[in-house]
Image (cartoon, rainbow, N blue to C red; front, side, top):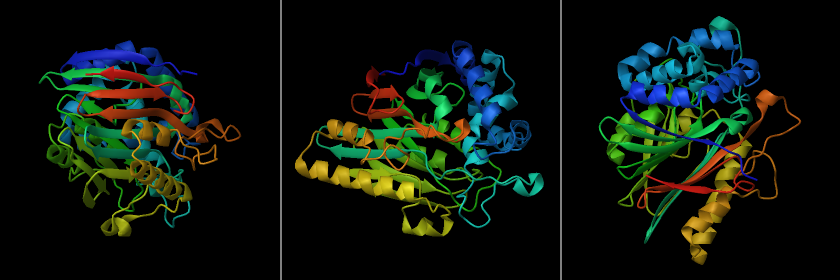
Length: 371
């Protein structure tokens, strides 16, 4: 089985890059927006029309802090011939559908008081692992998101006007949240659920900005915008073998400089971030423990690091749901509630390559691409 995806090359200013992506992926972008229009409330958000209106409140923050990233999104809308407000909604997926744990008291989004709509969502989405050993600088990531995105993936080769090259896979209507760049930096992102979310710079735009960082220090600076709307986990690696994990909420953060390995899922791990936690998910904690165990055992055995990461990303632990690292959709659930691993990546920051597949890695063959 091999779920197809489209390869797109884009160069120039951010607006030009966005326009080229929009033109090349127009059909997929239109289909992606239609999916969100049909299922946004089932995903845990407001109606799509209300989401369009709410999204406008985030734009001034984004334009002020990340004007070039907004220009890329505007270019995408122009190239795909869709309204910017409609394209903004999926790029506000975490702000509008991942506000809090459904089991947590007061688990509502920033506009719920005005709209009267609850903002509940599965507190899952993504697993990241990193390994640094002699001869290996690897970062691995399963992108778990809404199942309707799995057939709309694009592999982007972007070259900005300052010469930075970026290689990233994402859903066609999203700015890429993870990837590798020509400066030898790779980043994986994990949704976190804090209690201090607010209207501000959307997380997906911040993640896109991190992809242009020249150093891990710059990546952290970009992640810690003071007016960010919410938090995220950022797993970062560079070609020198530095492996960092940065947890953020809207107002707090914790940085761990790992030695030779790191694992993260969808809850805060740093003790100083415990006060921000609202996730009570069993799934994220199970995946973290399972991935750590497999990684520790494999490294102790002397397993090849790349083969080990490949095995872990495809692990089911005897399960076929989102309690497993390799996530498959629950076909009995409404379409808009189905989560799955929509893409799986292993980045090598020394070779500047990615091994990637669309869909669950247990079923789909990885392909290799290089900057």
